[in-house]
Length: 334
Image (cartoon, rainbow, N blue to C red; front, side, top):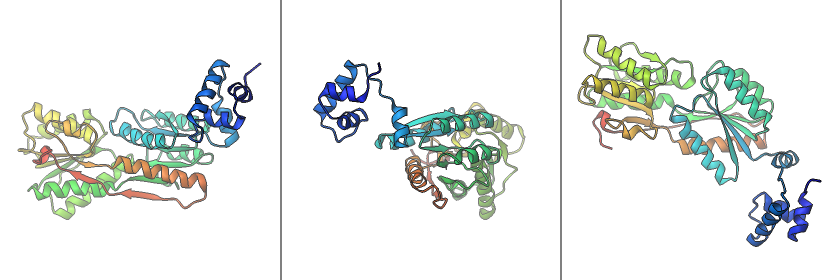
């Protein structure tokens, strides 16, 4: 016969309500009572069924999160910020990696729906192809998109103003005398890639800078290396500045420039985007656009709270102004 919460309460000499609060970690139980209940639960081998409790309460105290690829250092940084905020609330995070694959992303999203998470925070893999899975999930749980968003989807979103961030980088190198800038980034398959490309084109036009055709492929170190090699192999003078769509691309550019004795910042200025943890450890330390991850995490959970309380609340899109961090790759100091 299975042990019940009533058995635990009787063994500990407390009420069922006190035993329940103690086992769920409530702060409204005196430490000595909580210890007695815990001892009773261990003695009786009580299996605390969190799923059953969640079904009774209508909440699981968990939030699901799906990122495009855990290998990109920016996404773990966002995950950490969200998890810290959830920990402050006594809640847990279930993290899934979509592996840059739409089909895997859909399976992960629907798995989290099946786990009855209280809400979903997602960085969509694609601006267009992620929409169907998110529409399906929206019928069951609240969704907040972060960093990127799916097109034509009425869902809350939190991120930085990508166009403003890229403009800050362009204006910075222009203020240092750069007249010829090239943009190295990802193909505009995601909202962030599209907005950063648009921001670059607008900024160089406004500043009157010469800009060769952008080099676009993917957000990766390997692409940064290949793009740098392409610039070196063109047989023409290098641009005055290379504006990179994210930091990992910039790492690849810096690595290949150093290998071919192209000096940064003396010969070429280089900037990134995101200010991931390793940006200041690059050689040279990278000037980049900082995304305020802690504030983004706070806003994500605030919007989830609103959506949980009122599923019909007006959709919100929150674009936070990023900050340019100037380091040695453009001649500044860490």
